[in-house]
Amino acid sequence: MSNSPEHSPLGKNSAYRTDYAPELLFPIPRIGKRDELGLTGTLPFFGVDIWNAYELSWLNMRGKPQVAVARITVPADSPNIVESKSFKLYLNSFNQTRLGGPEALRDLLQQDLSAATGANVHVVLTMQEDFATLKMGELDGLLLDRLDIEVDHYSPQPSILKANFDELPVEETLVSHLLKSNCLVTGQPDWGSVQISYSGPQIDQESLLKYLIGFREHNEFHEQCVERIFVDILRACKPAHLTVYARYTRRGGLDINPWRSNFTKAGRPSNLRNARQ
Image (cartoon, rainbow, N blue to C red; front, side, top):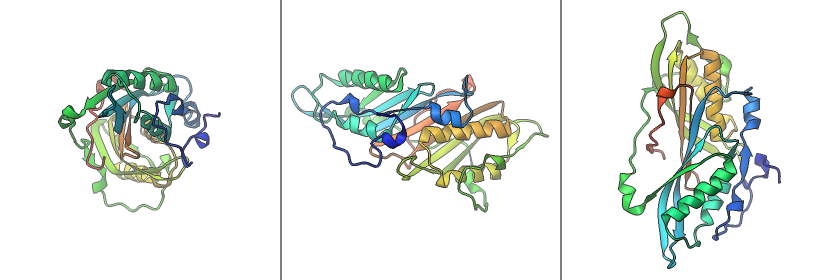
């Protein structure tokens, strides 16, 4: 079977397996969209995709259901992403599967997802007795959405991005909750918040907000949108340091939160769930 998005389970009727079935995972190579962005050779960023799974259940050895929340971290340099509906179907395959404990589940998740993505995937399970430790928070930064702008274009236009190359460089963090894109296959809306941290020539905020709103009718997966944003800002505004982090609302009990950066001091994101997630 081809691993192109149109051959994935997206937009198709699917039988919901309740017995362990790792073959349900559908990997999609990253290379196609990266070629489209002109990313060949060494990537201009590193990062991770953080998945949170809120609908995760299995049976213990006595047949009693267990529940947990999973955090799955996929390296950005993995050859593949996993299509999200196939991920959901795979997680459902544990529903009637008996396992010896949370460690057995974590080990299977890490094994199967590492095989599908082609990289070492890290999984952390939070059991129900620790649910209270899962905190919420919002992305820090100056809110771009405060700007009163007129918008008439709803596809990405990197050409409108501007920066002030004649003044001293700045260091700032900007946030917008107006990011919306659409599923590459089904066209269903994907809602997100995005944080852009950078140092370098000051980016014109109005043009940046218009650019981000321009994803509103754009069809791409979450990971691909974040990489497009990163590359377009890097090329147009030439920051010395740049980090782009998006938190998308969940679908099917899963949320996807891609993070891309080109400087080591950025640090991993906190994975705090925001109000819309």
